[in-house]
Image 1 (cartoon, helix red, strand yellow):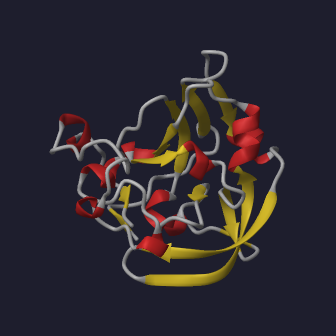
Image 2: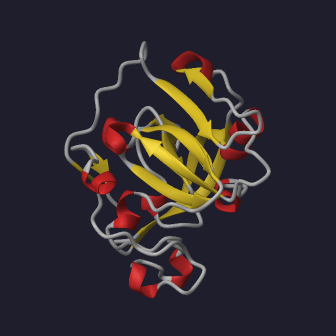
Length: 198
């Protein structure tokens, strides 16, 4: 599900960037063609939606997050990432969640390219967390040395999003689960018209 219309994909201008607290202090950018040349893998995993449905045994095809991080490594002090998607959508993850073995930047599911509604040309899949932690239409990663809530996390969703613990809402957070929930802020209200929902 998502709010608003999906963005228009233009391969000639599409890129993926890694920035923030990188190992060398710079940023790394891949064009669409460059990104598609990165090593690919298949990940068989379930998909958990916060609206209480699960899709079992999906085969996701794409670039493992660990492969991407190895190509553009973070600084030693990085603990979290902010995942950026088209139209200003963000979500935050612990670096350990991004590096989990099943986390993949996917372009296909069950042998078929994703549809635009499901995130084409690229969506992040984090199988051990709720679906909103794996946004559609992903465009980049920002390495963080302190945690920062993303779009839905600023609006009352749980900062971690573990489906096995049913971590849906920020009022369920334990100390250490994340920074204090933000009130409606300029950064939150600046998000664009088509954003992912859980």
